[in-house]
Image (cartoon, rainbow, N blue to C red; front, side, top):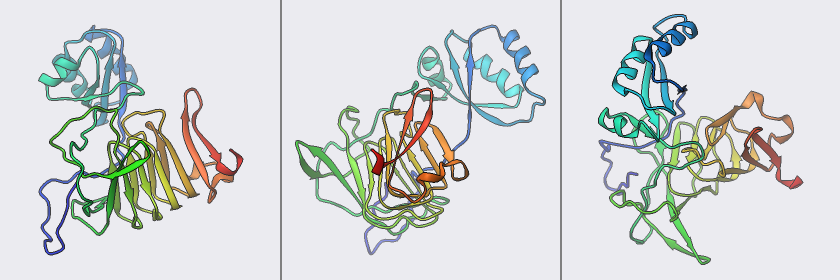
Length: 270
């Protein structure tokens, strides 16, 4: 998160911002590479698909050999699911993803200080744009100001919500890890709001809405006026054309239900 002084307009060297990425999960139940090779040959029509894949194996693997095999078929391994292959993945510098329904451990503040004014980031560049964010941690019905300090790793039980008061404009991306993301204004088409917990929008919600971004199936989305281009909870998503017609422009709750996928509920009916 970049904090800019009014007199300073320097471009940060490194910026985190959200993007929806598409990759496939490759579930493997054997360590026999010849069997894997044969089945890939039956599944893939060519070796130039360039599909990013996440390796999910319930048996031990020779991970370097498996990665080489996948690359030979045009697949691009980007990481593994946490478990048996975790140690090998670290040595191979591959990403380690949480198992279903688990959150990535959060980086949270260790100190509470006065409110500062961070900025929302553009969805397609690292240049800082206008915006104001507030962090608030709930503790026995008392809201205390908080500033994110990435140096300190704290238990996932400590949750820091973020309140954003400005309109999220087209091209902007607001990405929050560590608690609910609460927008008191609207999200324009072409913008995106992403959080690993629940997302609340008290204005008109267009653009891309993502809750439970690291796999939390208990996360929900609450919108005052629901009309997004994409909505996603815990990795399950729905595009605008596939949304139920009766929820458009209504006050809506979205949640994930195992076996059903995304469930949309007009809050007047709750």
